[in-house]
Image (cartoon, rainbow, N blue to C red):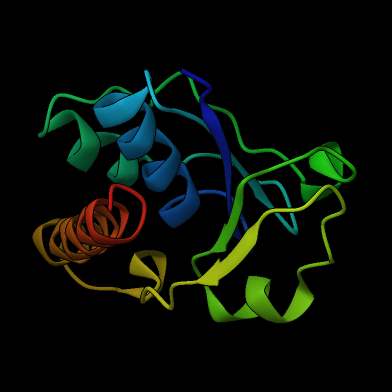
Length: 137
């Protein structure tokens, strides 16, 4: 069985796209190869690592990568998970289906640690639902 290649894109490749990459790898690495990148590379947010650990997926070794690293590579799906990345996303040659999931940015939430973690959990859970409904069908 051939695995499908999926690229998740976000602006900073620090939270939403990182969690999506980890979710897909954690739940279906036998069916999908998952990657993530950003229009700007930063670092993986500790809150993203923490909420993924809560569901048994370790993304602590993932690194933030720039989008240009993957230009020209073939993907079955290119999925933007933030509106800014959707606007800036280039056309990927080599086929593939383009999807856009407008997931609220948990990194933009201020407040207590508990409030910030709740925002990351909400993004994680929304990503998990979208992956299940749109990629596993």
